[in-house]
Image 1 (cartoon, rainbow, N blue to C red):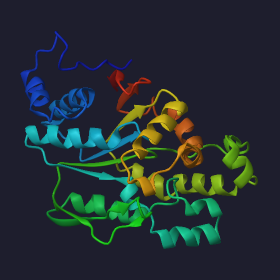
Image 2: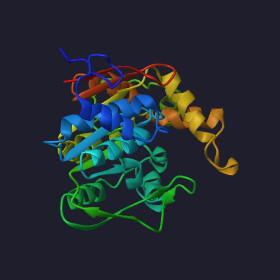
Image 3: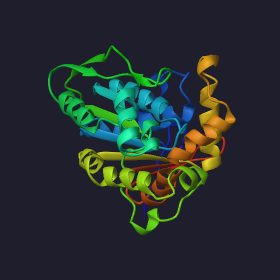
Length: 288
């Protein structure tokens, strides 16, 4: 049975280091993420995991939590670098080729098969060594890789990769037979797209994910919440680049199958399981 995490406002908390870390974090960050980041950092201060995977449905708060973890690690003089699997999307031109050569749905970024996994592996490897590392940046506004990379210095005590599909495993062949939504039924009637995605998970993605020392999973309460949170994120984008509700519905449909599968498969495998409620608050957090 997983022990439930003790949080900084818990009256039974006796570790002052955890409380001090929590209080040092930017109050603009959500309180729940500050509490969790402090709890993680205090556990990592003597034996930090070299590579951390942070997974969860769209809009779950992965990027925000990653920022809190980086700051919490710094409190204990641990150097953490956060990267996103989104920044390793294949270029627009490369995805268009996939769309022509393999399946039209692969032109849309998101599912496994649309990332440059080799580049991701090389960056994570480089973060374990001394020297400057060029981390790619993906511009979602233009749906392509930015010209300039982000420059960070290695070595990092903690190299964190966050992403909605991080840690996912392939499904069984039987699970792929029936479509899970209208997108699959209409645009992938023969299952070719979902088989390609599944094969990618069993190949290069499996090798990438096997290299992580710690997996944190943010379990969303429902697919309806994912759609709502994803639509909320659109409000932060320039008006001419925002997706409307129907466009968000179709976009999230690309992620639905794997999101549902991860909801089943990851809780028993994650080292840290975080259950979110419909209001985006942390309902429960437990360690393996």
